[in-house]
Image 1 (spheres, helix red, strand yellow):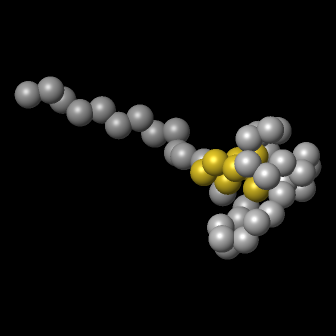
Image 2 (cartoon, one colour):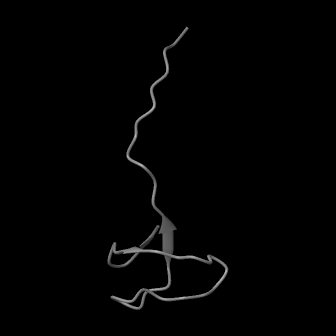
Length: 44
């Protein structure tokens, strides 16, 4: 899943090499969504 930079809509992209636009706002800048899992490490 990718997120549109303008309207923050999640857009599924099967082939990231193809230029496409957001179906909602026709924006062309996307960023990859990341899980909201926080990883903590103990200090030594």
